[in-house]
Amino acid sequence: MPQKDENLSQNDDLTAENLKNSGNEYFSLDKFPESVDSYSQALALKLDNKLRLTLLKNRAMARLKLEDFEGAESDCDEALKLSQNDAKALYRRALAREKLDKIGSAFTDAKEALRLLPNDKSLTELCARLVKANSERLKQTESTESKAKEMMKLAFENVGKEGEMQIKALNNLLVLCRDSADGANRVWNNGEIVTQLLSIITNVEKNSDNEALAAVRVLSELTGKSRERAIQTMELLGGPQILTRLIAARKPLVFVEAASTVIQHVFNGLAAMDRSKEIKPCAETVEKNKLPILRIILELEEMLTDPKFDIFVRECVIDLLMKNLMHMDGGLPRGWSWRFIEGRGLYKMLHLATQVPELCDYPVSVETRQHVAIFLTRLYDDMVFDQRRALYSEVVKNVFDGLLIDIDQRISKIKLVALLITLMQGPIDVGFNLLTNDKITGIMLSMADVENGDNLQQSLAVELIVLSVSKYERATALIKHGLPVLKKLYRSEDQNVRVRALVGLCKCAASAGDDCSRQPMDDESRTKLAMACRKYLVVENANKYSVDVRRFACEGLSYLSLDAEIKEQIVCDTELLKSLVELAKNAGALCVYTMAAIFMNCANAYEKPKIDEEMIKLAQFSKHHVPETHPKRC
Image (cartoon, rainbow, N blue to C red; front, side, top):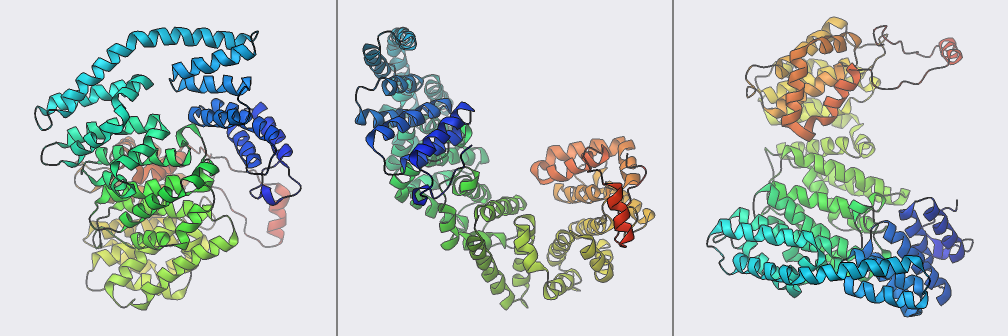
């Protein structure tokens, strides 16, 4: 199969004809996204009109298969500019318009295509289907129009009065939008509804959060059904700044999430993409709309570190950037994520990585760090070239060095450790490059062993110690120098410090994996650690320990569950298993991975490659260590 190339226009070996054949081959294999990519790359080259016409029609067909009906209609429009009587282009545009509920114009296209190809059975069936749909539409139009007018009157003419009635009217408008394109057009009313909905959303004194939520859901439905409406919405709202600030208009999380979908729909419209349907951005459309896209991204960047915005808003902003910037993950074309690290974007994200809830420049939560860590990982993965990764690492190093300058100050230590924790949970290679030096190890141990009872420093230092123990050799070194510190912290009265120290001890104990021949701690010590974790998990009063404390205990147990004796104890402990399930319900994403690890280890639900006996003998002969599996593993 022909291979895709990012620099096709500069490659003499690949021609538009090659790419067309590649797209056809992908299409025959039902690989429609790849097919669209190949046709798009060919269309970016200098072509004669005949080949361009063929490629546009082929891409329209692939987009129909992907349910990208607006994209298919656009391709057919371009094709018909080149040849206004092309029956295939008319037929495919009719199919796209049928799905977009543009029945009248779809019938016009189908009728013209049938005139050109009078014996085509598919066209005859399409015309019959459209005639039937049109007659049904005529019956419904009057009813839909009257319903829309009635609901608009109830929703907007009595603002601030009878809140329940207004919510019901807005919900009915939402149903009308969902039911049909005609209903959505009636509700849209040439964009007049946008300012009316915005008035409800922003008028905190007169309208409740529930009314604002109903209004933003109508706006989300309208923008989600049409790229054209999505772009117009941004313009009618007054530009990218008001659009992005929409998510901060109300406090409830459900409103913030609904408002963020409006911003996502605007991104979809500006880039002609849809992640939910695996429709990748169109490079030509992105180039055309690059200015508004850039302005939205810059506004979102500003919101990352603005103290005015609360936790939910900040986390939604991170997620929006993550969904749209990363080319390798279906986001904007390559180059947009590079601009993010060349400008202020990465610096702002790293500043956010230095924040902890107990000592922050703007509101953050424990979950915020997870959002940032995932973003930094995806961004690093999107730097596909060594030069780009070097620039990414250079920015991180600059922030790191800036914190080291004032390392004697408490706040600099806390920010430095918070940054390293985030990096170790995200782009781990970048984190390790900063972590593997004696100075940082000394800072970690000194913060953990601080004498003035600074629980925040201690808990963060221990958390970083836990994350740094990723290899047996590093665990052995830590046991030699840091074990007394961990034991001391385990005796702390602060449960946040104590449970993190427990996780550190558990990770050290399990650092040899299931190799029973080189365990750094004996069976009795590992069993005691497992029982200590259990005390946090199995409690009569569920409120005795916070969810954060209990999820760390779950993490400690997940490391120990590699041990055959301990996994046997877990399986036989009904109360513990029930407690783990309850914790999963409360902690959610915070403990999904560690919980899955416990159950996977207990069930031996992972495959282990079979090692050749001759390789084992060769390793023994060369005095290389050969792992020994515990007999109870199976």
